[in-house]
Image (tube, rainbow, N blue to C red; front, top):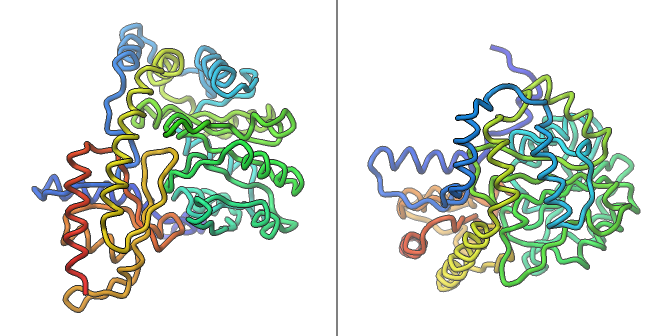
Length: 397
């Protein structure tokens, strides 16, 4: 069978593949500890679940407007005003089936062959493939752990060409946990304006922040910046609602209109039940979020402490999200029973086979020196998992 050229531009998601592999091995009776999950391990808060149940009982189970119900759009507008000091109108919001879906819609509407999109690396695994599927070119800019994996205005200036259309900023970041402060955001925003780049701000981890870090949306810097930006967010990470599949776009009214047109010919509306539950998430669960974040910070501290006890492993202390991204490159070139570790894929396979621990290879995020570990697991599981990693690495010579 002949497949389209566009589907051959993209690869399967390595993060989803690692998580699926770990679950498959567990189902077959293997004792696998997985650091691969890209979702909170907490249950969805009870208030949110009850809102979904109530929606079913009230028969709110039919089609809704393609871009979401007004009540949810209003909750999103109020959330932006309350949390981000941003003013949007309902016609500037599009609700979709997750933040990934929002970005996919945006790429299909705005970008095409010949366009270049600047993507700081390490990047979320889906950015380059979503850009390629639209026919555009991801321009990958490597960042340094010594600079907390943050792109600089000088790097942006050097990457810009006449074909540059946009830059994607993800703060806090998946996979590094890096987060830009207000001053850094201002410099990036000014640079983007000067170079006529649309800012695509992925803020899905905005509430998962640690050590009193002050989260700033790049869109809140000024009205001019807000008008030159598209903000992507959702309920998956902050409210433990990954399976409910609700994300949203906020931005220019005409862009929202065009993305709604595309969505109307693909998924139609997001699930009505999930929309009702998301209203409760946005309006009435801050205490639940705070409790989850406090637990994540404890886990981060323990995981980081354990990792840094492994000789020759280096790791940036994440300011947000629920990932660490340690550098394991010291072990590249070493072997086990004649089989050489060439990079992050081989090391991840080795750790899964010999340590019974699942990690995501850094190459999936554009950084082959590293592997990603999620700390969306209990403290006991984290300690046991790092102990397995340590013992497995001792087998290399």
